[in-house]
Every structure is written in C-alpha cells, then in structure tokens.
Amino acid sequence: MSEMVPADDTRRIALVDLLDRVLGGGVVITGEITLSLADVDMVRISLRTLIASVSALVPEPVGEETADD
Image (cartoon, rainbow, N blue to C red; front, side, top):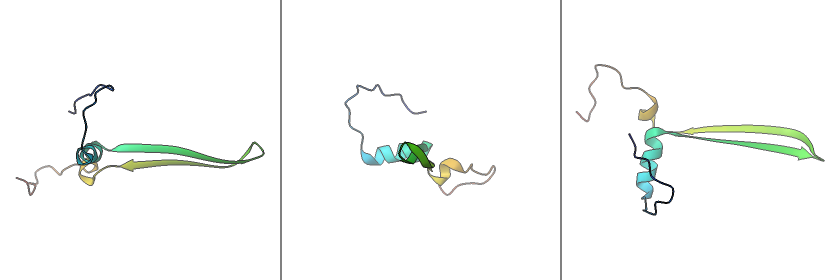
C-alpha cells in the first residue's frame, strides 16, 4: 500500500516517482465543456480519461511465470 502524506509536507518527489505511482495505480481525469450562445446551452461535451499502465489493468494469468522470476 502507498503511504499517506500530509498536505503540508514539503518534501520533493521526483517526476519519475510520481509517474510510477500514477501508472501503478491509475488515475481518472474528468472534464466538461459547455458551449453556449446568449445563455442558451448549445453543445455539452463530457470527457473522461483513464491513465494507467497495462500491467495495472490486466490481471496476471494464474499459473504463468513472469520474466522477472
């Protein structure tokens, strides 16, 4: 499990470590865009993106050995 870090912690985290944590567990980014004209909503676009590594999403088959073993 990952360790919970207080918000006021000032230690620095390397970009590689941050990327490893994000890809290891995954992150979902959501957003919404609304185009309107004269206060009338014309177009509404909802976006949702999942960023994760393949190994985090695909379970390892039971009984198969990995190259790391």
